[in-house]
Image (cartoon, rainbow, N blue to C red; front, side, top):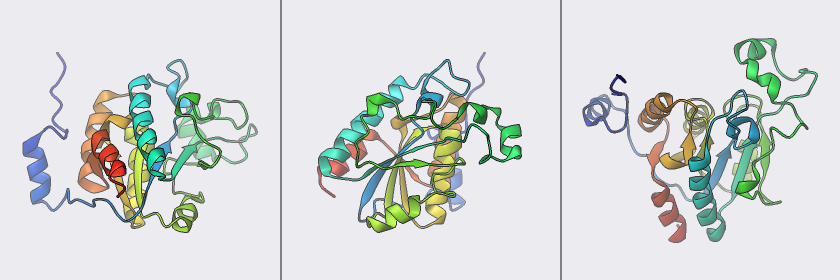
Length: 219
């Protein structure tokens, strides 16, 4: 028998407990939003890969978000993780803790954004060394240069790079929004629990429809 999942957005009593403790405020939309697509590359989306899982449903939802953003002229940015085949740019501790880093080699294709998302030439691809898209990358500079104060975070994995990116975003003063259907994880329980934590601590967890409506209104 599967244990009941209680650490979830659907647990109204727990949501209320966190609200009473001063969590779960709403950051809302800022003045200008961009879509940040986290790690939708073969390393993560191929179920046969070491770190991969089936993200077909998530991919379809991301495409809906991207269509809305592109139609509205909103910036779209992608991230991936890739290391030199010599491992000269990845720490020993990282390789010990996450052996899958040995499969994320630059130039071997696995770190390339999946073609289904139809990344355009003017949509930046930011290579990040760690979970957060903000850590040791030029993402902050790119966002500031374009006057962006809001990131719509989609992709994978909810419990890792999505959560870490949202934590960095709020720490740096960016509005972060996560359309829950457009993020995924290899573990359903981790996905559900981390959506709860993200919503209480780092970002507003919303729906894809909310995002589409916002971009359609030209806000």
